[in-house]
Length: 232
Ligand SMILES: [Zn+2]
Image 1 (cartoon, rainbow, N blue to C red):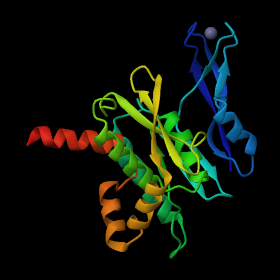
Image 2: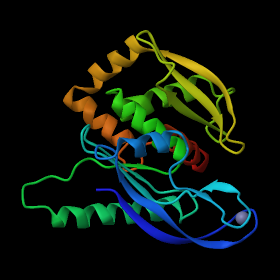
Image 3: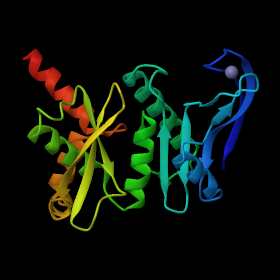
């Protein structure tokens, strides 16, 4: 079910405050147009009634594609620190589990912090790719290209649109300026090989250990590793 709530929002242009209706959750199986709005950067967009400026409100959003079994929770940065967000998220999952009939498992919920991560995860899951293996590939790319893609400054985003049967493409994004700076490729055959490897029980456990979630991110993993090494 899609849920709309009323919020009091201040215009970033003229500071005028107005009441607007924004989505808390979207069910894109019921309303596919909401997926299109999200992809077109139009979801939760507001036009100021005083100065006419249009802007987007980035707020917590539950993205639900029941048809494809995709459930993603977007918890925008700046609404608390990451660890607090993860704790809050885990607590909400636990309470969800309590509501379910016994023996019924809650669906896997993906947690993302940035809008680009939400869009990336939707495309990735729609393409039938494994988010942990994709993040593992990103970690490999970071390790091999430290000069060009330092995880402190650069994010890697999987690019479904340009990927082919032969190559998976990753866009380099400067985290501060949010500018896209180039693309790196990784062979799909090598990705498939990794999927096969991680499909074995002991290796699945290793992958889960590397990316336990709920926030699955190669960049976060690389930064954590770097910090731990500095401490040693
Ligand atoms: Zn305004």
